[in-house]
Image 1 (cartoon, chains in turn red, purple):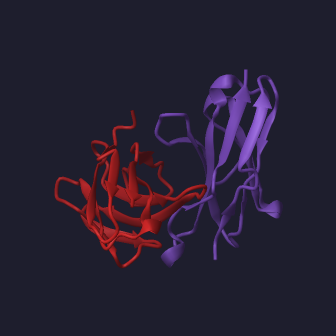
Image 2 (tube, each protein chain N blue to C red; image 1 turned 135 degrees about the vertical axis):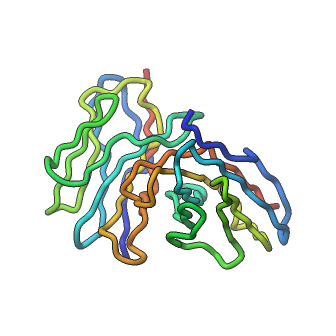
Length: 114
Length: 116
């Protein structure tokens, strides 16, 4: 158990819908990263928050947004969903804001868009 | 653009065989390298990392990796694998802090199956 929790584990929805994925970092970690893993592809970095502020942005679509709350949990919002958004979404946390630090991963949320 | 390549997507070995998983990166300057592992049903976890110094890095569970700058490689090795090494292995890299470079870039992963 990494100490990072993600809910829900599985999500099935239809095209055009909006969903929210939730992540709680390890106790004491201030940084939260979101990744997308599509079939047979590596992890694609989406966005990072550190202590409530956006710190780095990767290949995140405009239909996607995220935020980190004062209690440090984070939510990833995916809207106007398309079939191609079906993927495993991972959240990771680390103590500081640098990607040099070890990241601790959650179990992921598997999103299926029908 | 920076990239990380893992050329072997699937590797099948017998127990006690030696393992080498390839990882190549395309960064031009300073680079920091990682290997993460995901065992079946478990979360991704750090196996080992290279920042500087001795290019031969030792990690958990008997794994090691060698940074060869001239070949832009960071291959993962283990002299004798066990059935419990069955997992998916990911190589990742991050360059020096500079704008959009400052994020982990991941390889596609290598699924390793060890036959008992």
